[in-house]
Each structure stands twice: as C-alpha cells, then as structure tokens.
Length: 492
Image (cartoon, rainbow, N blue to C red; front, side, top):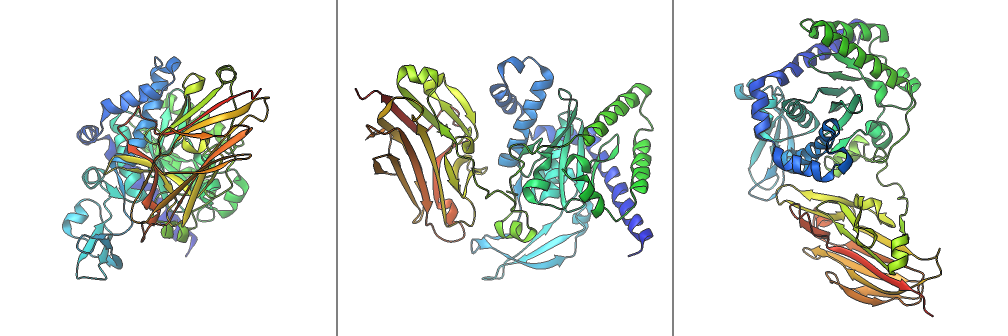
C-alpha cells in the first residue's frame, strides 16, 4: 500500500473519531445516560471506600466515585459478548460469517453484523456492532468498542472531562481527567482498571504503535503514557511520519477549540504542557499492570496472545502478629468476596483490599462477580482443571507457639465439583469439611499454620464455575464468611 494511501486511511480514522466524540456532548443523551446510573448507591460506596480525611475534598471524592462507576459498569451494567447463545439447546452457537446490516442497524451505526447458527438445531442469531452510544444504553452488550463507547458517554453525563482512546493494535478504552492529580487517568471499563496505563504493554504483552485520544477539545497522541520503551515503539510506527501525525492532531485540535474562549484555551494549553512533560518521565510498573486480559473467552484471549502474565508466580503474603495481637494472644482474619476485602478483627478491624493481597500461595484463581445474580466469589480461572489458594500465619519471629485455631470454610459446589480444605502446622495436618463454621483445630506447639483450599472437578465448559469459595450476595456489605482465627501464647 502506498504511503499516500496510508495517510488517507489514517486521517480518515482521526477525523471520524474526532467527530464521533461530539455525540457525547448532546445534553438530552447525557440525561438518558445519567438515568441509567444508580448514582445514590455509587455515592454511598464512594463515601464508604474514600479515606475519612479525603471525604471533604470534592476532587478526591470525584476520583473515588470514578472507581465505583468503573466497578458498577463492569459488574452490573454492561455484558461482554463472545458468541450468541442458543436458547433452545442452551449452548453457544457457531459463527457463520458476516451478514448484511438492515436499515435499522445502519441507523445506529452498525455497518458490521455477525451471524450465528446453532449446530444442533435450526436456530440462528445475529449481532449488530452498534456504534451509537444511545443504542448501547439499551443493548448493554458488546466487546471493547461498545464498552468504551458507552462508558465514555456515561462519564461525560457525570461531567467528567473524558477522552475516547483508540489503540491501533485493536483495543479501545477511556481516559478521565483528575482535577486532584492534575493528570489524565487511564480507565478500561472492560477490565474495571483505573490508572493502570502499562496494563497492555506489560500485562497483555501488546506491541503498541499508535494510541490516540479524542475529546470535545482535542485530538492527542498519548502513546507514550502506555509504554516503557519509546525507542521500540518508534521503530514500529511506520504508517505515517511523526511530523505529519503531529500536524494533523494539532489541526484537528484547533478545529475543536475554534469556539473556545481565551481563558479556556489557556487552561487547555497548560494541561497539555503538563501531559507532554509526563510523557518524558520514566515509568515504573505498578501493582495490577502485570495482569493479562480478563475480558473475553479464554480461547479468544489465547488466540490474541493477551493472556499475558496473569499466571506469573504470586508473591507470598505471610501474616505475622501485630503489637496488639501479641498482647491479646489472638489473630483473627476474615474475608468478604462481596467487598473483596479482608478485615483483621484482632488488629483494630484494619482493612486489606483485594483477595490476592492476603494469600500465601495461589494458582489459577480469580474473583468472579455475577451481575445477573448479584453474587461474588472466588473461583478457578476459566479453562483450568484445578485451582488452589492458601493463607499463612507465622510466629517464627517470636518466642510464642500456636495453641488452637478456629476456621470457617465457606464453599459452594455444583455438579460434581469438589473443594478440599486443609489446615496444617509444623506437626499437624487436618482435612476440614467444606462449609464448616467455627471449627476448632488443635495446633498446639506449631510456630505457623496454613489454611488451604483446592478446587477441582465439575462438568462441561463451565466446570471452573462449579467450585466457589465465599460465595455471597454483592449486596451483603457486613458479612465476612471466610475466617481464620488463631490463639497463641507460651506453652510454659
């Protein structure tokens, strides 16, 4: 393909998307989007999860609300579409290629239609790839393009300064400007990820080229926020010249700002200067950026090579006694899958976020939320035959010994799924009944103990879902069903 033709195609994508984002500025459409958001619930959650010293800071609270918005959008509002499902045979259909869009499809920007057919009966289905954010408020399903399109609209409806971000290596997400941090935050609604810009480079292993952000005010090349190695990326950017790209993004930005007053333009310029300075700073990998993709079927992610590093070795977490626990002679840890939090009852009800931040060893486990049933639990990763995790408490740095442990092991199984619980110390090992509550175990003389769970078996494609740990309603905010309570002291 000639260089001039590549420029034409590139400019066409820039122009189309710079016009598309103006749809989000329609006040009637914003009102419709806002009615879809359970704002009072999200505000309550944001207040609950926002540090007490920041609750009076409106800018910090807006950032906390954004996190709740991402979580709600992924877990309760939008649905990922892999393939159509046959309602007669209750199984996935097969893709049979593209179809012809109807007049109604075209009305909502669906120039592509995917056709599906059941291999067991005569049932067929179709999936129009709608590009109209208003239509997506109704359908509430799709892949990354539909997700980012709808989520960006909702962010604008809540008056966040927002960008629609297009990755030339086939992904789309959103950026939201934080007034508190004075910078743009990466927000991927498919992954419920916020401020994890190296997710694609480090976690998914993508070979990035061009990443362009579009808003009502500007078209900006933001590739440098999403990579650690600028030299490698530059070598892969061979569609258009860097000078040409800068000229075109500047030109489109000037067009978008043609009606902006002087003070607003100055503010945008200062914001841009800060962003360009940010691009020059070296990037360190943050927690969460090393994960592979979670959205989409396993086989689809494997085909795209985006499973990434999510199977990498977990850094073991070992719980040791605090000063307060040394005094009381008791360690008590509880976990809620609904909140995805640990509470350490024996240490002033201190909180640790996220299940993986409390486990000793883990293999092929993730936290699953069911938006249709409003349930959350720990399960095996999709496609795995087994999953295991454990929690460890250690007194080796003290002159004390474990006397007794009390455990609650909440597990739910379906079909022939099996969960095997064990607790063991240096000279003890006991198999526990799945579902036991406040079960007492004699561990006298041990310096440490480990509570473990192994999930296996199950049937069919959903075998991974037939073993669930700490399953509970996402509306249960005060229940912590999984618990490890250890009593310790001197044996003298």
